[in-house]
Image 1 (cartoon, each protein chain N blue to C red):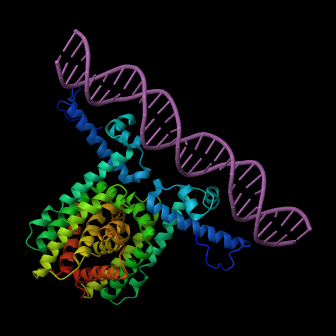
Image 2: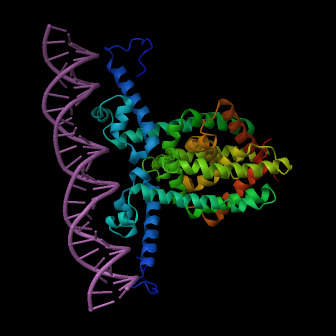
Image 3: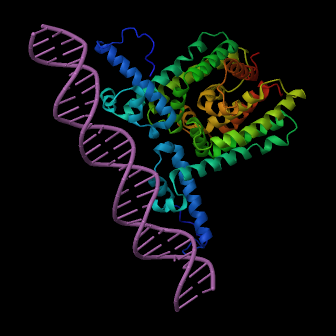
Length: 216
Length: 216
DNA sequence: TCACAAGCTGACCAACCGGTCAAGATTATT
DNA sequence: AATAATCTTGACCGGTTGGTCAGCTTGTGA
């Protein structure tokens, strides 16, 4: 329904590589949206197929089962989630490191709200699909960051707060703007947050948390 | 499976009032659990019936449709949610008011995690059932508390932060311990938080936020 | 050009789900 | 004791869902 603009060369003869990549991408994008809006149980393969512009049977050609498709969606989100902490690492102190982390996670909440919702849903239901990731990758990741925070505390760069609970607060606060975006939008008069409001949200979160850990 | 203790008089002849109340309560409790674990779409009336110890057809005698049952569950949670702010009101300042609110909401997360998850799920999916509540009751509630916070700011009792974003942070942080309880438990070595750890969580949240808003 | 492999799809199916119903059981009312 | 109102339940039904499959089209390599 948006084929008015001059298409490049999307005409028929495409390579198999192109086709495969394009379809997989379309399916995963549609699946993320549908899983976020309806949950795993409420999502239907038919709806995902319609949204991806493919017949349902074709979905099962690329992804054998609904659960396999869901698993891929969750894994993709987990990757994005982890990479958000790259900014966390090379930082000299909490103001820089945690400030940048909040910015990065708020940006993900804004640009990738469906992904955040799928992740939240998965964890809320007991992480039936990515429990092993929680126990390995996430546990290591968390331990590493907690150590960095503890280092900042020992260096007198921030108040002695429990690093784990600080991390939970960072996750909770930033992801809230995606997961509960609908509630925030409703309380905002039914309008999505504007650029200005998103900046205000980021600044508020950073101000309270950075002051709260005695880093300013 | 816990019928060892001497039962009072739960023997057969019960009044209709007792029966009705008991069954409704059992159904609502089971439904809350199942909806929390599987989401609305993933939950089945059969599973709720089994968990409540009743035949499925009997569920439809008390609640005509799955959606009606779900609606009652969500409404119950909403009530609890609102009443948590009673402590917020008569407070003289942010330390007392917000401190008590955090305590109350953390206690709800601990005692009522399933309810919190159902609420989160409902909002994440666009609040199809309680949108009207968001636009009326919740909006008024939020406006009222924001005014209280603004009053504290004007009185110089705390730093000038945006009241709305502060409320979002309070909701996000406290509910995180219920909604993402499974993740926290996993990161805690697979063990549920102990009494001591729950106290540490409360204290961490209160310390960071109260210091973060310049109230200590 | 041709044969093969990869990709595509309409039609179909068994399983399951929410909801109905009529008949029976139990409690309240007269 | 008789009648009425409420509650209980197994059996059943139409509709939907995830998944299959045989046959088709299309790109690829020789």
